[in-house]
Length: 119
Image (cartoon, rainbow, N blue to C red; front, side, top):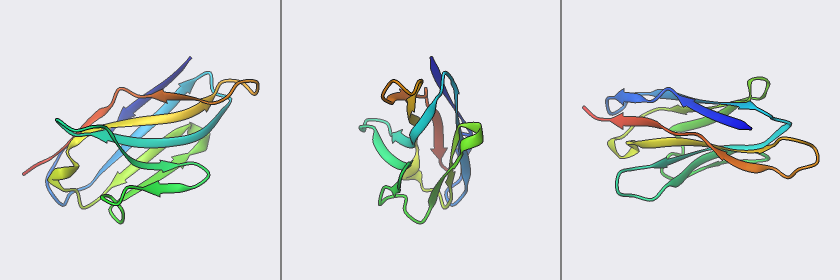
């Protein structure tokens, strides 16, 4: 099996920074893509950024957030700068992982980490 564990969330003032981490472990043959989603209270989960064959950012975070990966550690990071109250959400990590060369990649999700931006 595969597990994703996020860390790095917390309370930060507007204009501040946080760095989220998500480490994948378990039966991993290859990781096709790693992504960050977020879900604010009362809203649907939305894609924030992904890193795979290409890199994508939602318009709302372009220029403020940076996604990066450490493939040796099976870890993805999200550096969040110039945080705004509207960035408050539970941030989830998702990865597309193959456990064997014989099987297609499957989606795995972490349990989320809460980011609160407030003065």
